[in-house]
Image 1: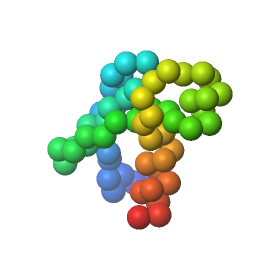
Image 2 (image 1 turned 30 degrees about the vertical axis):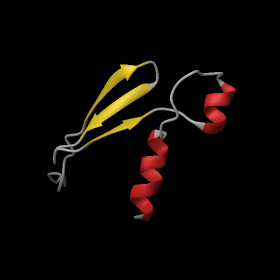
Image 3 (image 1 turned 30 degrees about the horizontal axis):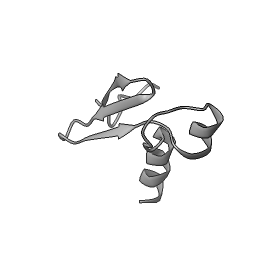
Image 4 (image 1 turned 120 degrees about the vertical axis):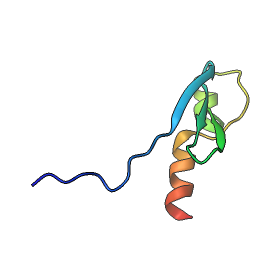
Length: 63
């Protein structure tokens, strides 16, 4: 039996430049994502150090 979802997220993610992304949250907040550390070094990217999307996922699961 199919059920209606309890919650549907309405986050909007847009490209700022290169690998830089900005997420807009429905409650009004926003945050930037990109690359840093070993991933940035591996791909030889010359971009600002920004948290990876997975960094936010891990933080939200732990918090």
